[in-house]
Length: 355
Image 1 (cartoon, rainbow, N blue to C red):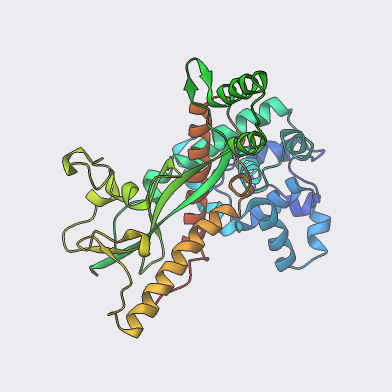
Image 2 (tube, rainbow, N blue to C red; image 1 turned 135 degrees about the vertical axis):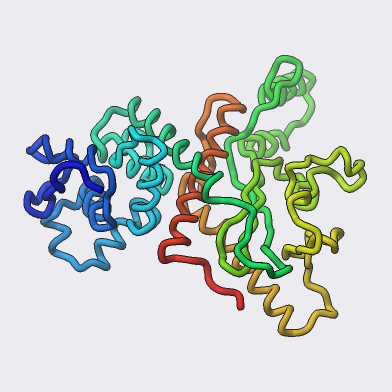
């Protein structure tokens, strides 16, 4: 329900963030539940489209504008914000929209400051705090459970994301510092190091891997785990350990141990080796079953593509001043966006059907 009068944005023609009537902005902070229309209008106002401009175009144009700033439709943001407000009573809708805007466009803090009003320092802390709030809904929204009794439950795949390098400490120096010292020493003894710039350039970027599963029959995301080293084989991630290691030493949190006896999940050719857990396309499969598996794999790939449509994950991730902080923030971004997309799946934009 709404506490106090509804903000009359349409009547004032003003943005709630920039209105000459202070009570309008205050009311927006006190609303307990916002409708899709409220969020559409407010989100566009914060993005620079006041009510006069919104009124000059049709709904489709306004929806397109909104989505280009926030990544999903207001129909996904409304239930997301309701759940966040229930979990965090101090949740502010403006800051929630600002965090989604940051995740989707990955604008610099100075750009966000010009758009949203507060200083760069406030924005830098707030968008991360609110993205962490969104991430906290992962336990509620992404569960390895199913509303059907079919034996083939889900599809699985891994994907990697580019980050700034995660420095490792070697003899008191980071790996990059070690390479620089090695380069200098080689120069001193007149050793050719024509290949070093290539090494140093490659060293500037790192990749992290995440594992996910989609429910085959509903399309919902039911599993997301990471980050892992990009060089780790998908099957090692799935098992929680290497094949040559003893099974009792595998990580019990791995997906391998979550699959009930008799159930299966669908993987690509990289998931050969566990027929009691995984279904992989084979020559002896029927034409219809091969077509089904191909559509399942294709939809699984679109999930990670959808995550990378959010520019904070599409481009090299550069947040965090230490390896530990960067790992934490990258995990936060991946999981927060996955949660947002789960709300989008559930409220009008599910993945394509495979049957």
